Amino acid sequence: MSKIRAAAIHFGITMSIILPLLILVKHYWFRGSFFSLMDANGLFFLFLLVGFICGPFLTFFVFDKKKKRLSLVIDIAVIAVLQIFGVGYGLFVMSYARPVVMVFEVDRIRVLSFAELDRQEENIFPGWTSIWSFSQPQVVFLRPAGSNGEKWKRIYSDINGQQASRQPSQWTDYYDNSKIILERTKPLETLIEKFPEKVKEIEFSIRANASARWLPLVSEKKLDWVIFLDDKNAKPIAFMNLDGFF
Image 1 (cartoon, rainbow, N blue to C red):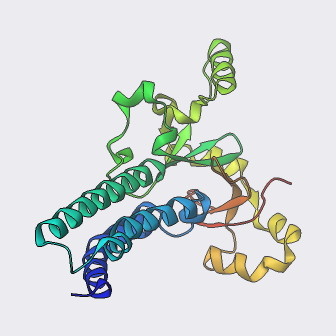
Image 2: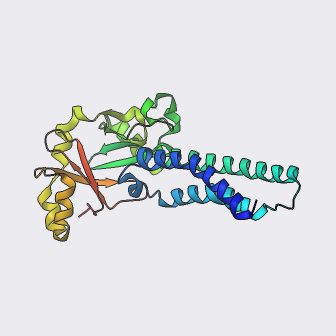
Image 3: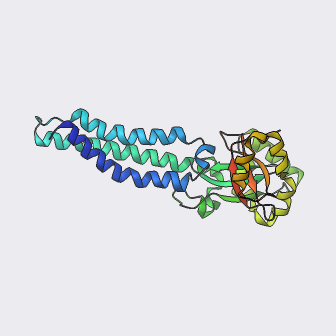
Protein backbone atom coordinates (compact mmCIF):
# COMPACT_ATOMS: atom_id res chain seq x y z
CA MET A 1 0.00 0.00 0.00
CA SER A 2 1.36 3.44 -0.92
CA LYS A 3 1.56 6.52 1.32
CA ILE A 4 -1.14 8.27 -0.70
CA ARG A 5 -3.56 5.35 -0.42
CA ALA A 6 -2.97 5.00 3.31
CA ALA A 7 -3.54 8.72 3.82
CA ALA A 8 -6.65 8.59 1.60
CA ILE A 9 -8.12 5.75 3.67
CA HIS A 10 -7.41 7.69 6.85
CA PHE A 11 -8.96 10.79 5.28
CA GLY A 12 -12.13 8.84 4.49
CA ILE A 13 -12.36 7.54 8.06
CA THR A 14 -11.69 11.04 9.41
CA MET A 15 -14.44 12.55 7.25
CA SER A 16 -16.97 9.95 8.42
CA ILE A 17 -16.24 10.99 12.01
CA ILE A 18 -15.77 14.74 11.63
CA LEU A 19 -18.64 15.43 9.21
CA PRO A 20 -21.38 14.74 11.81
CA LEU A 21 -19.42 16.90 14.27
CA LEU A 22 -19.24 19.72 11.71
CA ILE A 23 -23.02 19.51 11.27
CA LEU A 24 -23.41 19.71 15.05
CA VAL A 25 -21.14 22.74 15.33
CA LYS A 26 -22.31 24.66 12.26
CA HIS A 27 -26.04 23.91 12.24
CA TYR A 28 -26.87 23.50 15.91
CA TRP A 29 -24.37 25.25 18.17
CA PHE A 30 -23.55 28.16 15.83
CA ARG A 31 -26.58 28.23 13.57
CA GLY A 32 -26.91 31.06 11.05
CA SER A 33 -25.53 34.43 12.11
CA PHE A 34 -24.31 33.14 15.48
CA PHE A 35 -21.19 31.83 13.76
CA SER A 36 -20.07 35.34 12.80
CA LEU A 37 -21.55 37.03 15.85
CA MET A 38 -19.52 34.85 18.21
CA ASP A 39 -16.44 35.18 15.98
CA ALA A 40 -16.12 31.40 15.80
CA ASN A 41 -14.18 31.32 12.52
CA GLY A 42 -10.79 30.93 14.21
CA LEU A 43 -11.95 28.16 16.52
CA PHE A 44 -13.69 26.36 13.68
CA PHE A 45 -10.58 26.50 11.50
CA LEU A 46 -8.45 25.22 14.38
CA PHE A 47 -10.93 22.39 14.96
CA LEU A 48 -10.63 21.33 11.30
CA LEU A 49 -6.86 21.78 11.29
CA VAL A 50 -6.36 19.58 14.34
CA GLY A 51 -8.71 16.95 12.94
CA PHE A 52 -6.83 16.62 9.68
CA ILE A 53 -3.23 17.42 10.70
CA CYS A 54 -3.43 14.87 13.51
CA GLY A 55 -4.80 12.29 11.08
CA PRO A 56 -4.26 11.86 7.35
CA PHE A 57 -1.24 14.16 7.20
CA LEU A 58 0.62 12.28 9.93
CA THR A 59 -0.35 8.96 8.34
CA PHE A 60 1.15 10.13 5.05
CA PHE A 61 4.28 11.29 6.87
CA VAL A 62 4.98 8.11 8.88
CA PHE A 63 3.62 5.39 6.59
CA ASP A 64 6.27 3.24 4.99
CA LYS A 65 5.42 -0.15 3.49
CA LYS A 66 8.98 -1.25 4.29
CA LYS A 67 8.24 -1.05 8.01
CA LYS A 68 7.30 -4.17 9.92
CA ARG A 69 3.56 -4.71 10.39
CA LEU A 70 3.76 -4.28 14.17
CA SER A 71 5.63 -1.00 13.79
CA LEU A 72 3.01 0.32 11.36
CA VAL A 73 0.17 -0.72 13.67
CA ILE A 74 1.81 1.10 16.58
CA ASP A 75 2.38 4.22 14.46
CA ILE A 76 -1.23 4.32 13.25
CA ALA A 77 -2.54 3.63 16.76
CA VAL A 78 -0.53 6.55 18.18
CA ILE A 79 -1.79 8.82 15.41
CA ALA A 80 -5.39 7.70 16.03
CA VAL A 81 -5.08 8.44 19.75
CA LEU A 82 -3.60 11.88 19.05
CA GLN A 83 -6.38 12.58 16.57
CA ILE A 84 -9.12 11.49 18.97
CA PHE A 85 -7.73 13.68 21.74
CA GLY A 86 -7.25 16.61 19.35
CA VAL A 87 -10.75 16.43 17.91
CA GLY A 88 -12.23 15.82 21.37
CA TYR A 89 -10.48 18.85 22.80
CA GLY A 90 -11.52 20.98 19.82
CA LEU A 91 -15.14 19.91 20.27
CA PHE A 92 -14.93 20.66 23.99
CA VAL A 93 -13.63 24.18 23.29
CA MET A 94 -16.38 24.78 20.72
CA SER A 95 -19.01 23.61 23.18
CA TYR A 96 -17.86 26.20 25.72
CA ALA A 97 -17.77 28.94 23.10
CA ARG A 98 -21.26 28.25 21.74
CA PRO A 99 -24.00 30.83 22.41
CA VAL A 100 -26.53 29.69 25.01
CA VAL A 101 -28.52 32.78 25.98
CA MET A 102 -29.54 36.23 24.73
CA VAL A 103 -30.09 38.65 27.60
CA PHE A 104 -32.04 41.89 27.27
CA GLU A 105 -30.20 44.48 29.33
CA VAL A 106 -31.52 48.07 29.47
CA ASP A 107 -31.13 49.11 25.81
CA ARG A 108 -29.50 46.16 24.04
CA ILE A 109 -29.44 42.40 23.81
CA ARG A 110 -26.28 40.57 24.79
CA VAL A 111 -25.38 37.11 23.52
CA LEU A 112 -23.48 34.98 26.02
CA SER A 113 -21.59 31.75 25.52
CA PHE A 114 -21.55 28.95 28.06
CA ALA A 115 -18.01 29.97 29.07
CA GLU A 116 -19.21 33.47 30.00
CA LEU A 117 -21.83 32.36 32.54
CA ASP A 118 -21.03 32.95 36.20
CA ARG A 119 -19.65 29.64 37.56
CA GLN A 120 -20.65 30.62 41.09
CA GLU A 121 -24.25 30.02 40.01
CA GLU A 122 -23.62 26.78 38.15
CA ASN A 123 -26.05 24.91 40.42
CA ILE A 124 -28.94 26.98 39.03
CA PHE A 125 -27.97 26.95 35.34
CA PRO A 126 -31.08 26.13 33.25
CA GLY A 127 -30.91 22.76 31.50
CA TRP A 128 -30.84 24.40 28.06
CA THR A 129 -27.47 26.01 28.89
CA SER A 130 -25.75 22.62 29.02
CA ILE A 131 -22.59 22.50 26.90
CA TRP A 132 -23.87 19.38 25.12
CA SER A 133 -27.39 20.68 24.55
CA PHE A 134 -28.84 20.85 21.03
CA SER A 135 -31.21 23.69 21.94
CA GLN A 136 -30.93 27.14 20.41
CA PRO A 137 -30.01 30.15 22.57
CA GLN A 138 -32.95 31.24 24.71
CA VAL A 139 -33.99 34.85 25.32
CA VAL A 140 -34.24 36.16 28.88
CA PHE A 141 -34.84 39.50 30.58
CA LEU A 142 -32.34 41.03 33.01
CA ARG A 143 -34.51 42.08 35.90
CA PRO A 144 -33.98 45.62 37.24
CA ALA A 145 -32.01 46.06 40.46
CA GLY A 146 -34.46 46.03 43.36
CA SER A 147 -32.64 48.37 45.75
CA ASN A 148 -29.75 50.81 45.97
CA GLY A 149 -27.68 48.10 47.61
CA GLU A 150 -28.28 45.77 44.67
CA LYS A 151 -27.43 48.57 42.22
CA TRP A 152 -24.06 49.09 43.91
CA LYS A 153 -23.48 45.35 43.99
CA ARG A 154 -24.06 45.23 40.24
CA ILE A 155 -21.69 48.12 39.64
CA TYR A 156 -19.03 46.33 41.68
CA SER A 157 -19.66 43.10 39.74
CA ASP A 158 -19.39 44.97 36.43
CA ILE A 159 -16.02 46.40 37.46
CA ASN A 160 -14.81 42.88 38.23
CA GLY A 161 -16.03 41.49 34.93
CA GLN A 162 -19.01 39.62 36.37
CA GLN A 163 -21.92 41.50 34.85
CA ALA A 164 -25.38 40.74 36.16
CA SER A 165 -26.38 39.45 32.74
CA ARG A 166 -23.99 36.51 33.28
CA GLN A 167 -25.86 35.45 36.42
CA PRO A 168 -28.93 33.21 35.93
CA SER A 169 -30.30 34.40 39.29
CA GLN A 170 -30.79 37.81 37.68
CA TRP A 171 -32.78 36.49 34.72
CA THR A 172 -36.52 36.50 34.40
CA ASP A 173 -39.02 35.66 31.67
CA TYR A 174 -38.41 37.57 28.46
CA TYR A 175 -41.91 37.53 27.05
CA ASP A 176 -43.51 38.56 30.34
CA ASN A 177 -41.53 41.78 29.94
CA SER A 178 -42.10 42.28 26.23
CA LYS A 179 -43.88 45.59 26.80
CA ILE A 180 -40.82 47.05 28.55
CA ILE A 181 -38.53 45.66 25.86
CA LEU A 182 -40.58 47.15 23.03
CA GLU A 183 -40.53 50.55 24.75
CA ARG A 184 -36.72 50.46 24.54
CA THR A 185 -36.59 49.38 20.89
CA LYS A 186 -36.12 51.72 17.96
CA PRO A 187 -38.21 52.10 14.80
CA LEU A 188 -36.95 50.58 11.58
CA GLU A 189 -36.86 53.98 9.92
CA THR A 190 -33.94 55.14 12.05
CA LEU A 191 -31.81 52.23 10.85
CA ILE A 192 -32.76 52.80 7.22
CA GLU A 193 -31.92 56.50 7.49
CA LYS A 194 -28.51 55.63 8.90
CA PHE A 195 -27.79 52.87 6.36
CA PRO A 196 -29.77 53.70 3.18
CA GLU A 197 -27.48 51.45 1.13
CA LYS A 198 -28.62 48.46 3.21
CA VAL A 199 -32.37 48.87 2.64
CA LYS A 200 -32.78 45.70 0.58
CA GLU A 201 -30.80 43.62 3.05
CA ILE A 202 -32.82 45.01 5.94
CA GLU A 203 -36.10 44.27 4.17
CA PHE A 204 -34.93 40.74 3.42
CA SER A 205 -33.92 40.21 7.06
CA ILE A 206 -37.23 41.34 8.56
CA ARG A 207 -39.20 39.03 6.24
CA ALA A 208 -41.87 41.53 5.19
CA ASN A 209 -42.51 42.64 8.79
CA ALA A 210 -42.45 46.34 7.97
CA SER A 211 -43.30 47.33 11.53
CA ALA A 212 -40.40 45.39 13.08
CA ARG A 213 -38.33 47.11 15.76
CA TRP A 214 -34.63 46.80 16.47
CA LEU A 215 -31.97 46.98 19.17
CA PRO A 216 -28.16 46.81 19.25
CA LEU A 217 -26.92 43.24 19.56
CA VAL A 218 -23.58 42.60 21.23
CA SER A 219 -21.33 39.72 22.20
CA GLU A 220 -17.95 39.56 23.90
CA LYS A 221 -16.14 40.09 20.59
CA LYS A 222 -18.71 41.93 18.47
CA LEU A 223 -20.41 45.27 19.11
CA ASP A 224 -21.59 46.11 15.60
CA TRP A 225 -24.71 44.01 15.14
CA VAL A 226 -28.44 44.67 15.45
CA ILE A 227 -31.34 42.37 16.19
CA PHE A 228 -34.80 42.76 14.65
CA LEU A 229 -37.78 42.10 16.93
CA ASP A 230 -41.45 41.52 16.26
CA ASP A 231 -43.38 44.67 17.16
CA LYS A 232 -46.13 42.64 18.90
CA ASN A 233 -44.25 40.36 21.30
CA ALA A 234 -40.55 41.30 20.90
CA LYS A 235 -39.76 37.87 19.47
CA PRO A 236 -36.36 37.87 17.70
CA ILE A 237 -36.70 37.79 13.92
CA ALA A 238 -33.17 38.10 12.57
CA PHE A 239 -29.71 39.59 13.09
CA MET A 240 -27.70 41.87 10.85
CA ASN A 241 -24.13 43.10 10.88
CA LEU A 242 -24.78 46.85 11.39
CA ASP A 243 -23.51 49.18 14.09
CA GLY A 244 -26.55 50.03 16.20
CA PHE A 245 -24.86 52.57 18.44
CA PHE A 246 -25.56 55.97 16.94
